[in-house]
Length: 218
Image 1 (cartoon, rainbow, N blue to C red):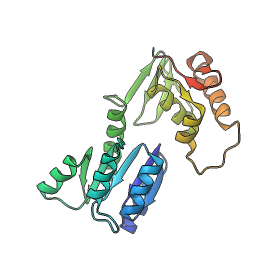
Image 2: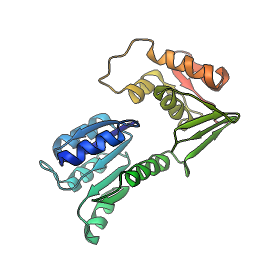
Image 3: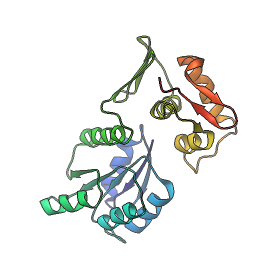
Image 4: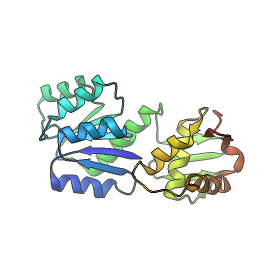
């Protein structure tokens, strides 16, 4: 999952990157203008945005992104605790607002909630046929038996489940799973599809020849 962090505090930024690193691919920028450019270019799954930024204030980053129809969930992370600041942030288009200092556990829980809401889910448990996925614990079971999935296999499964009934193109899946800067072998996606099918059942994932892959709506 791709997360954009726009935060100028060196110590805090490194701490967030280390804490979220196991579950997210974090791109970190410490300047508001650079952060806005990255947001417009990469379209991450989630954004953590500080307000007190050099180059461009966080509220201006937020307003500019929303004016350009960027719909990525954005969580403001700031020390500005006045009510009017919170109202201004939410009115500018923020999806959530977390005050510093904060608990990393709460930050992660809020990010999970934002991700679920953006995909029309209300809880942390995904059910599909005989599959059950606990997105908080990152556990997957088939007919009650826990499966051991690699990180890539898990992310691939979540992407396909969230897009049930829709074809996910090969290019889109590669961008979401590996990012734009990662060197890939030409068959990397096919290898992960093959391995995932072996674990959850070949019939779960359909190949749409010449386009990509999909899971049926039900």
